[in-house]
Length: 425
Image: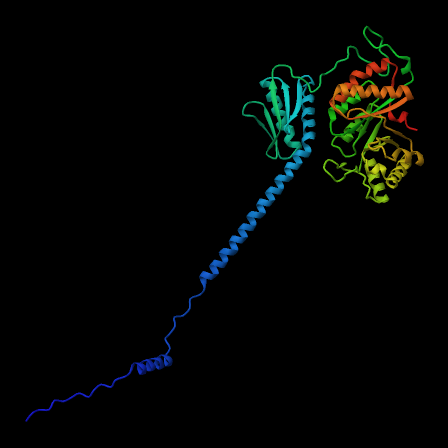
């Protein structure tokens, strides 16, 4: 009997649509487990690094700006003290025994070059002197020996002075003029061959010489005080050597003025700063009074004032009236420098009853011995015509040398030199 083959029941077919649906249903029922999140360390680290970089950049910029500002301040300070430093250095050399014939100086591209007569020994002495004295007086100053000899003075990293030592005599900035004979004070020199004969026109002529801008250069002020005739020094109230020069002038019984800074035309433009202790048009009367009294207290021995600059302030009638009130209270005189023709200083001083006078000739607008001598001759001519004259000069080497040579000749001609106090009225 034939055996029957067992037939398997056909497997249930599931369509793709159903399977996918069942799978989707199953996945909906049991979502897959997610891994636990790790802390966001990377993000925190990045933020920290950014903040650190910004802070470091800010600190670096701050240091850079501070350095730049400090460097600029040092540079300005060095420029401001350059002339004062030159004067101080020359004073040290002269105190050590060097003379005008053994030292010469000139400015070249902002560097003061000093030529000193002497060899290695003189160089060693100067180097030791500057190293000891200069750095103690001025900050940010370095004294060192140059690569090719000589001495260099640096301020704020910039060379300001260079010393050159030579064995032959040096040439002074202006030729030194030595009188053949010592000239007595206010005494005529006996006539000699090839000299100017006394002129009758010079009899009774009185001339006052006023030297402004005193206080920044001590050696030239001392030389002016040693001239054989009365010279009136007009001293800045707040210059480095003002008090010292005033003290030495009074010991020699010289009359001194205060060279009071006043506002010029064009202020505050370049080169128009009158300096510390100045009077300005914008000041109220009480401010002018306070500033003027403070200036006079610095050098109370002055006989009066004359204006430094002041081409604007001396044209301001109200401001000048306040000045004259103070001068009258203190018993001081006023010399109008006449830096501008429209100045009302002389007129208001006369109205206020303050003893006053005004300048006739500026002596040294050109710093040349020959030109200054021409201005001196012009001043004497005015004095011979009018009886008196007032000349104003400045503490330049050329001015000193011109006066030194001309004074003996004027004395022989009968001209009498007087202090400014003799010519005010």
